[in-house]
Image 1 (cartoon, rainbow, N blue to C red):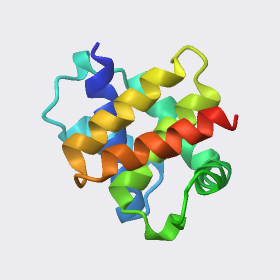
Image 2 (tube, rainbow, N blue to C red; image 1 turned 90 degrees about the horizontal axis):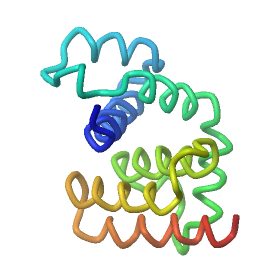
Image 3 (cartoon, helix red, strand yellow; image 1 turned 120 degrees about the vertical axis):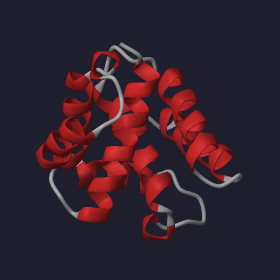
Length: 134
């Protein structure tokens, strides 16, 4: 099982949820049926837990993210950046076995790979603020 590939898949599925307005169960079933990824390398339990957790705690997560934005509003964030921030915030608040710095570093790497050039430092700042103000 590869945690980085798993987190990347979770971010893509969360992004898809934000676009298609489907619930996490439909998104995961569709993913399992149509993915090119080797499912042995993916932690489906983690994906299920995180997507369900984000869906069930979306308001609290968004509130926490917005509290740590500087000169930005949640609705101005790209859907990719918001998906990354939601996953990382969920991990920071609810996944006790994942160190906070790992969540931040993984969020930065996802931003470097999937978002704009300025997104990685932006996500780093938001998440670092969140941990500092925890």
